[in-house]
Length: 110
Image (cartoon, rainbow, N blue to C red):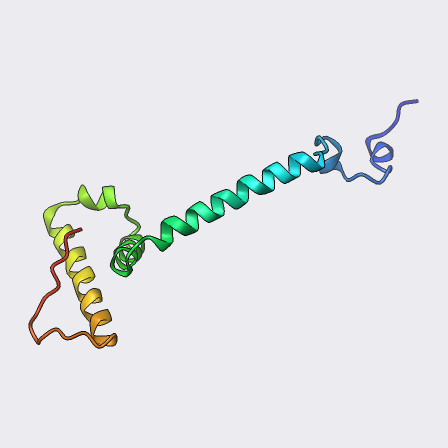
């Protein structure tokens, strides 16, 4: 008489974890340290960006585009998105009390 699968799992270990290798404390610490380093590196990379860079990335992301994909767009599409970026920068400048005169345009090179 063989042991059924159900009875072999009744030892208190759930099926998904029954086949995984247990990690030692040092392995867990190394994994946590690596994740922490990556989080810090990601934060530092983001913190170095200017507000305009973040705004450009946000607008490109809203169009589901990377910088490289934007660069490859036809001229008309690039101009439309560049205008959107320019308008967003102007609006942000006005909210922050910028001193641009009416009709001034932000010079944005994306």
